[in-house]
Length: 368
Image (cartoon, rainbow, N blue to C red):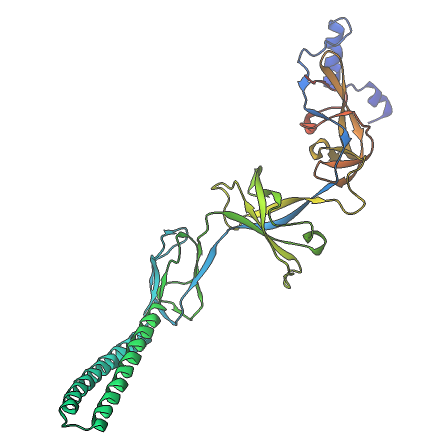
């Protein structure tokens, strides 16, 4: 396009605007729309708290991994993902052939021991009568008494053996130790399993918590009972209240962090085990960085684009209307009260704290 053509070319919208302006006496009509309401806050000094956020995952406060205590083939699997179970409910069972055989053998030995004990008791009673009548010697009586005691001990041992084998049969059953929800099932019916192999995971707790790890630079600022704020990636529009319930005194070698647990105080049914969470703590400022005269504005008052960080300063009028002016700012540390302002603002100025993406430099707004 030649320079002459560029000077002669008028965009259609601009040309239409010129025609309309000419038809109305050369002046464009002002908009009749009312000023847009805007929320604002006054710039002031901040405190000495620092806001720090860390990632974690949600879980119930009591998670039980269920397994058999003996080996065998799973003959009954009475659980599926999401099932609600009650305390004492039979969840799974093994064939347990070896344990049942051992139990039968123990029962047979118990019957034999009981028969021997009864025979020894009768012999002792007969010998006692003969000894008392003078027809049996003292040694015969003592031998009968010792034989009975031996038979009695054998019976007690056989009885204990039966009880142990009953317990062994019980090792081939999984009974719900508490009520809850099945969160995981790791085996199938007919599968051969070993002792201790995970079969299912039971969420038995009623409260949700966040497990996370904190670095050594932060852990001393976090204590049990401390409040926190919790957000979930799956629930971006909600923020939950949290409270620190556990702080580990030692580092986890696998992650080089200190394990911490935060209870979610107002969790809803939408919060599920395994959801990614962000926990925000308000920590004391480092030594020498406590409360000062540094200016602070809420974090939501600061915007950022390709030109850098900015705020909208509200210049008010006596009639309740104002004009917002975009102003570049330099921010420092993010604290509990918001961003520290290093330059660009003065104490007492008002800044918009909502709808920054819809404001324009020089736009008239309502501040009532």
